[in-house]
Length: 85
Image (cartoon, rainbow, N blue to C red):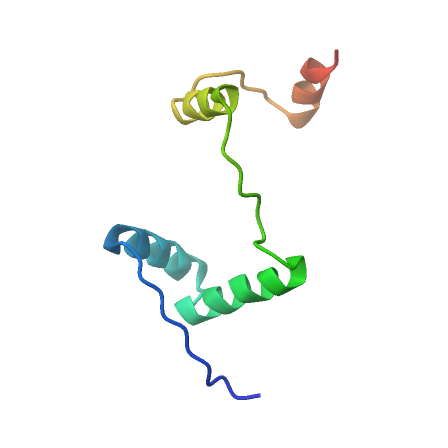
């Protein structure tokens, strides 16, 4: 089937530029990325990721991770061992 349908989206220039830079590194066109997103919406029968507001603990953990804080492990096995209660 020929691809003839069009969609338009308004984005902030910064978001558009950052996303396009990543897509270029991945070798994916913007049109292909849009189609992938739409196909995932169909496959999931909704948005293909969770839409949730993180609680205070989650926000702090995300902030700590971005700042390089928290535990680090040499292997996944060691991480799982540490998680045992």
